[in-house]
Length: 398
Image 1 (cartoon, rainbow, N blue to C red):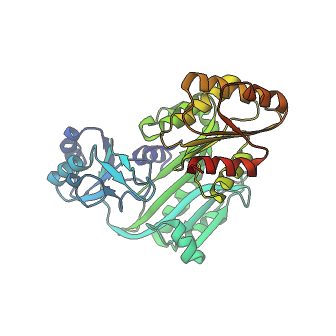
Image 2: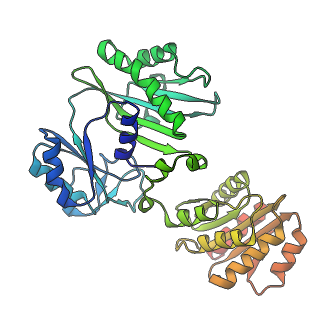
Image 3: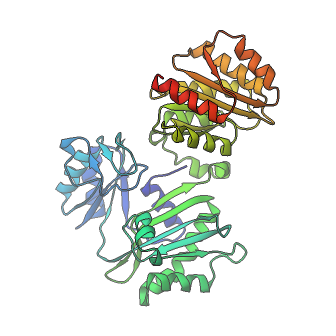
């Protein structure tokens, strides 16, 4: 689960991290009062959407101006002007896709005199099997670009979970970020705070880009992106309360009700698969034969008819889906349950696109019989390779 920047900063502030004073607004009428309360003389007006690259993004509406989704205001009047332009407009960034996202919240905060911009994130490092800091002196840039062009400027510091952030860890991070004097003292204090917040709140990502050294040599969290482990949210009702469903895909919200692992994608072939590995392989082979998957969907190892029916309905609710591939290997999952779920869903919502079904494993003959004896216009497949070729051909009209 993701949260907005202003929510992430409020959370980090509770742990003692240095953040600027700021307030969120949900209506343009609030802009003047918030600007007066913060006092200025420099305000930063920030669009709040669940996507990066806001500062370099562009609004679809001409009336929103051309200054991007993060703007510096030097007067109360400019704050009011920018909020009026941005709120309710659609911001397109390198992470939103062409559709963009509507800005429903604005964060206004005090400006800062910046000396240097740094990059810092905390994540689960699969290589070391530990939570790790990733830092670079190249703050404000896409870390992917830094990794590709100047990988020597990125340092990864895994943290021993028994010891937490040690003095040696903090020193290594300070050295990598070239922090000296007051900024170094701030870093030695800040790094354990960030790690504590990450672990205690079951975060999966904490990214600060940039972490700045101000002209007075104090550190400040200038931006913050936080994601949480969805499997641990039951432990954090305070975090759950921060969820903004308007930022989430409606299909993904519906899938979460049935404990389905679903991620919407940009393709036109809907996929229903059991097992994350098989789902990834299914998407890969669809791409291999020249098409694009419309989703990642893992119904799990022990799905019920109700769950399969819900999954099928979610797939067909996507107007971009021009064909569906059901690919099931029955271990714990029974093929006849999948077949019955598909039949039930089709009876309820209809079937207007080609459907290819590949079943293998537990009670496969029973599953194939159910589909064969139905009135469905189903294209059977013998294996994954066969299934992918048939659904791609059907979608392309071959």
